[in-house]
Length: 187
Image (cartoon, rainbow, N blue to C red; front, side, top):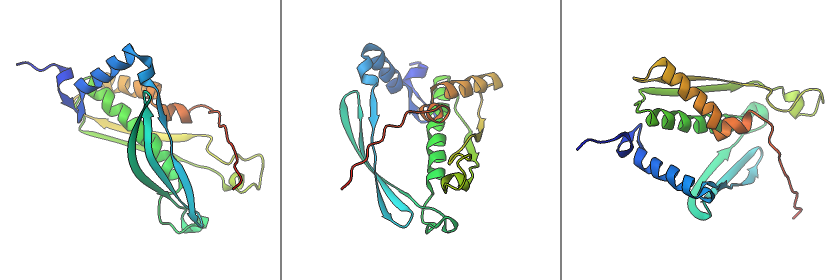
């Protein structure tokens, strides 16, 4: 029996399941709506813990349980017990793009040998500390390098790269302004 690309696994992804998900979303766009939510609490000094309890996919709640810890280096008044928020931001960006590279390669039948993403950014603490209003508290630019290898052609890898930049949620989120709606509750 001959296997088609959508009846196999490439890069660990079940392409048949991916095809089924895409078909279900095409048939019912409400199944495409995903809502993520986290709760973060301060645990002392500059340390915090974020709890992930689940997410909603197409109106169905899916339970998950994870804890993500953040802290600052000692030089920035922390205990150096975990990655800081900036490192976690870059981690979230890289992880999101990673899914895109793996999935796009798999859909093209390319079994990856290697995939790495290095991201870095520079910010000026004078903005964060409120010492100079002309200096932004965050990044003006993040630089990243993707190293990808496998039996694909340079053109295929270039197409994959452009597809990831076009479809990665976190690339999109960090590459343009997002409206932040905050609400303060005094307890």
